[in-house]
Image 1 (cartoon, rainbow, N blue to C red):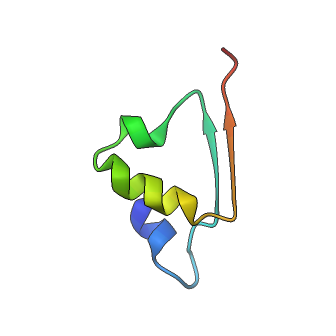
Image 2: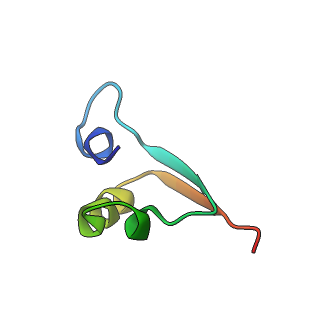
Image 3: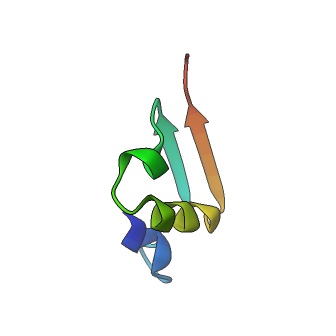
Length: 49
């Protein structure tokens, strides 16, 4: 997923919706994920708790 956020051009992920999760803490190489998330145009997190 991070590769698709970092690579410009067709197919690049520009938005992300997370439900009851934190991809920075729950995936390997969280720092890289954090940097990739900072470059998104839009991100929404839903957590009912």
